[in-house]
Length: 457
Image 1 (cartoon, rainbow, N blue to C red):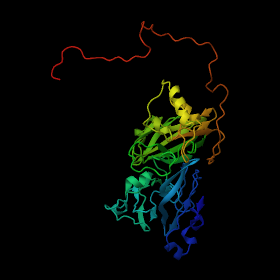
Image 2 (image 1 turned 90 degrees about the horizontal axis):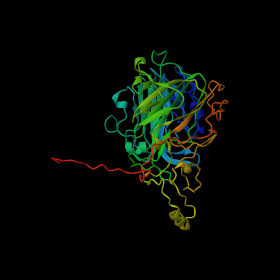
Image 3 (image 1 turned 120 degrees about the vertical axis):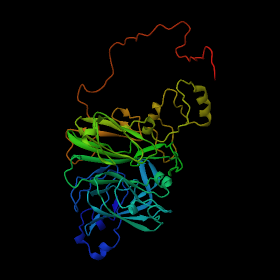
Image 4 (image 1 turned 135 degrees about the horizontal axis):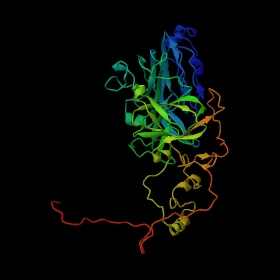
């Protein structure tokens, strides 16, 4: 839900429609609370551009004031629905974490008001921007901290096109662990030799949280062992699909504000890394990929033609990052027969389930009660059953009949006859194996001890 939008009227208001008194006042902030992907915000003032679509997010409206684009961000506690049935208590901007995407055009002069409604000081760093040093947002180094209840003004020219981020540089460990971050897109002001026009332009941030099952507030001291790996603070099945019409040129921009790298992998298509937070990649330095690593603090811009119909998986290739809330200090139980132990435990805990003796796939269909407000480890369902993945996972849905500009989910792909993997119905031949030596177990552990003389150690 967007509120207070009538003040700014989205991007539709031109400066001439508002009185001088109103323009001298602080722009009233626009608040968004819906977790759904919002349609692109078409620019109705300022320089034209092709807007992006923020996955499970939105773009912040602005007003033009004397030729300056004005935005208003409010740092505040927010509630983010990470997936249906699970809500987290985070800190963010304008009602959400991440905050709204800011879109401008190369050469725009921008003025951003940042109001602090947190219980501690904050600031705003414009990650990747060329700007006056005093606008860089590092508390103590380039500016005084923004005290609770105060508003600071940042003003600079968006000097180069590209994909950038924003986040605080005040009590950074806590504030970023609580979800304070957002995206910034600077579009080229005209035809650019290294930036091709595209039909669809998606953007999202990689972020991570450590929230105990049954609770709602992240553990801010966690350094690496997070249990919720998210895109725009959403976990699958809460992450929306990326849709495209077959043959369209698609751009995906990914930023990483977690504590580790993420190999982002797309099925069914090859892409080119056409940009970083340093700017467009020279054409001579591009090569086709199906996976690209996005390191901490980096942005990557991926361009490709969506020429293969289907529902294609799109995910981080670190397997733990495609799980939801799970414990990591769990012994491997594969092959362990613990029926006797389970029988005793169920006398005390009737709902207890044996987990892991045949692998963890059973978790996709488990019915054991979970604490309230918990994202189950694997809950996504597809047309053939449980998907078996969560966290940083979504789909690229390519359809022949998806209308241009239509971002709605087209449903599950209907596979043409003869194109679906199926069970083999013929006879099975036993694989040829080397003859086992008499008395040799099927699985063994060999220990090789050093032989011969040893000197000096």
